[in-house]
Length: 220
Image 1 (cartoon, rainbow, N blue to C red):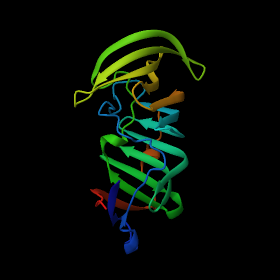
Image 2 (image 1 turned 90 degrees about the horizontal axis):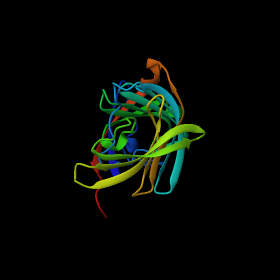
Image 3 (image 1 turned 180 degrees about the vertical axis):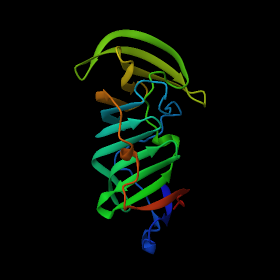
């Protein structure tokens, strides 16, 4: 587990006992996808949209409301994400800033951590490292018509992984992606392609910001 060390900015210092905490995600939304997950495709018409996000990893299933605007996205968790400072109801991923912000409304605080590939969601229809794609046929996702594909990718380590992928054939939008090799999937429901407000992706006014730096926890 990673250990996070904090320094504050735009705020008074937090108590010393909170300067080093462990950030434990209650739901494993941002688990690494072996290098295939990619940034928002700015050339895709889905670069700005909202959707209901459903994901599963290692038997854990969770839901959230998702808002995407180009190189940033906002996730409003149902149940929250547990941190050492309390529950964050909102996570904001800023690819432009290379930051991830956990918004703790009860403390009026934002915990900022460095962006890594673990925090990326797949949005593009074409997967990074894709080596083959076979159309299986017509299908449905949450009563929405879709085309189902069998897709194989090769990650940067040369490992092959296979996925089932459901695509909205009219808007060419990714609706669902399921790994055939492990207990993982992500699904987007009620996708609405529309302009998203800028303030969704900013730290709330009046919140103090705590910068966190991940370091390896000592063993034992």
